Image (cartoon, rainbow, N blue to C red; front, top):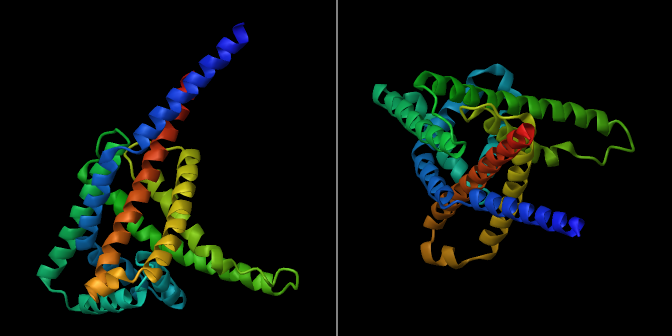
Length: 278
């Protein structure tokens, strides 16, 4: 009789764990946070892209891969109508060289407001204290500067691997660059999950949560493209404004997936700590 009781107790414990786990993962505030970050993204995305693309254009080492990286950025920033968005943003980036003192102040202000909001949300999800101002600047400046370097290294390593594969008749059909975007997104998610919160995050928790989040994001991107291509309602109603509408929608979806993955990372981290105590 003791064995069935133990099994029922175990099932009950797992049920409670899964219930609490899902309840924490799908909190209402995650939707509000996604909307908040989407709003700040609209104001800060140009300044941030100006900073990132300026790094690419001013350093000779990035010349050979600049076009590929630019295409990757905009195809993922806006899966549909990426050419139109690319044209607009390229115009903004070209005009950034004419920025006066007021323009520079705006770029700094918009970037700081975005990261301030992001820092508050991340540390709230991880239930920890916020960083000091200078600590936040250090961490997020590291993210902004490391991302271009990671992109360049990814393209360089992938191209070298592809050259080796093409030399062998048994592996010449393998195309590394086709799966590269997914691994780049995974790497960026992993890095941000690892260092964003003002608390130590284990590699295992960051790797698992970032992999699942990037996989969901990649599937969502393809689903979003399919929906936009086959749904002509918005185009007939909004006309040219539909591009902007879809851009806003995709930004929100991306933040929603990212934040749910971040919360999942926190839950995995908590679960690991509880198991360690036991």
